[in-house]
Amino acid sequence: MNRDDFPILSETVYGKPLVYLDNAATTQKPRQMLDAMADAYLYRNANIHRGVHHLSQVATERHEQARQRVAEFLGARSEKEIVFTKGTTDSINMLAFSFGEAFVRKDDEIIVSQLEHHSNIVPWQMLCERKQARLRVLPLDGNLRIDASALEGLVNERTRLISVAHVSNVLGAIQPVEDIVRIAQRHHIPVCIDGAQSAPHMPIDVQALDCDFYVCSAHKMYGPTGLGVLYGKQEWLEQLPPAEGGGEMIDHVRFEKTTYNQLPYKFEAGTPDFIGSCAFAAALDYIDSAGRESVCRHESELTDYLERRLAETEGVRIYSKGTAKAGAVSFNVYQGDRLLHPFDVGTLLDRQGVAVRTGHHCAEPLMDYLHILGTVRASIALYNNREDIDALIAALRKAIAMLG
Image 1 (cartoon, helix red, strand yellow):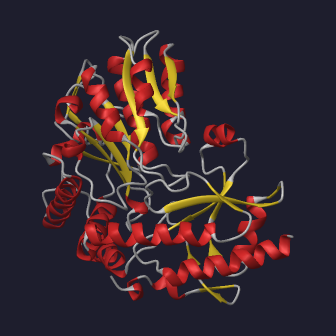
Image 2 (cartoon, helix red, strand yellow):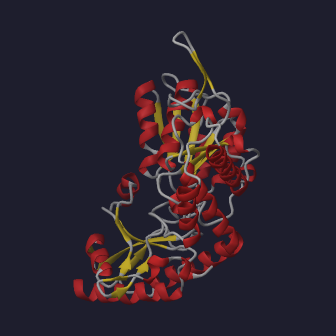
Image 3 (cartoon, helix red, strand yellow):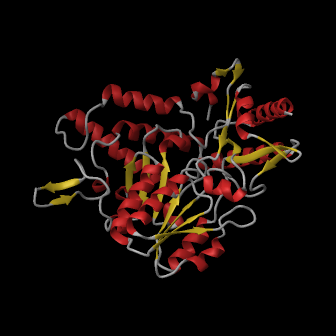
C-alpha cells in the first residue's frame, strides 16, 4: 500500500496537511479504483444482461465477474448469494421488507441490540409497525459490548430474526457475533450481521460465521458510493419474495401474473450499477494486494496506539476502553465535570486539518444509554499511520487549551 495511491491525502485544509480520520463514515479512494471506474465509463458503457451487441456482452461479463469477486471476498458459496444494493442501509431495508412479508406476523418478534446504527433499527421498527410485531433489544455488558448471554432470555417461539452489528460504528468494539449465531441456531432463528464496519477492517468468511445474512457498503471499503451488498444463504434467498418490482427481476410478465427471475436477479430491479460493481471489484483487489491479514494487523496496532495516546491526554474519556476494536475509537473531553461539546472539539480539530466525526453517529439509543448527546470519533484506514495519530493528539491538546 502506498499513500500516494490516494490523491486526496496530499490535500491541505485551512493551510494544514489533511489528516483524515473519518474512515468509518467513508474511506478515501485509490487511483486503481478510480481508473477502473473511468475505464468502464470510457470503454464498456452499455446496459447489461439483455443486450445482444458486443459492448453490452462485455459489460455484462465484467459486472458478473465483479459479483464473483465479491462472493470470493466474503467467502460465499456461490455468486447467487450476492445481491447488489445501494448500500448497507438499502440492504437492511430490502431484507426487512422481504423477510417481513414472508415470515413475520402479528405478535412476532425481531431482536436488535442497544448499540445499533439507525439503519439496523428503523427498518425493523417499520416492519414491526406494519405487521404489528414487536422489537426487542439485546442489552450491553459492562464493557459496552453486546451481552450475548442475555440472548437466551430474549428468544422465544415468536422470535423470527436477530440483526446485530459485527463492529459498533460508534465504539469500534468488535461484537460477539459468533456467540449470537451459535445461540440463535440452537433455536433455529436466522441472524443478519451488519458488516458495514467489519468488512473494511478484517477478513470476512460468511461461511465460517455461518450467519444467514450479511450486509456491507462499497464506499466504506475504498469503493464507490451508492453500491452495497446483501449476502444471503441461498436457501433463504430462494424463499424470500422480491422487495422491488421492475425490469431485470422478472422471468415473464403478464397482466394476469408475473413470474420472477432466478437468484440473485429477482432482488435487483432495474438497471444495476454495472460501473460501480467494476470499481468495487478493483477496490477489493486493492485490499487484497495489501493483504487482509496485514491490513488487520496494521489497523489493530494503530487503533491501540490511538487509544493509548488519547488515554495520555488529560480530560479524555474513552468509551469501551480496552476492548478489541476495529478501526474506530470514540471519546469525549471533560474539564472537571464540564463536558466540552463534541461539535466544538471537532470544529477546532478541523481548523487544524484533522478530520474526525462528531455527534450521535446515527446511534441515538446508544447515546441515551450513555447519557450523552454525542462523542468525538476518530476512525482509521489502511493508509493511516502513527504520524496521523500524533497530529490528532497535538491538535486535540491545542483545542482543549483553547476551549478551557
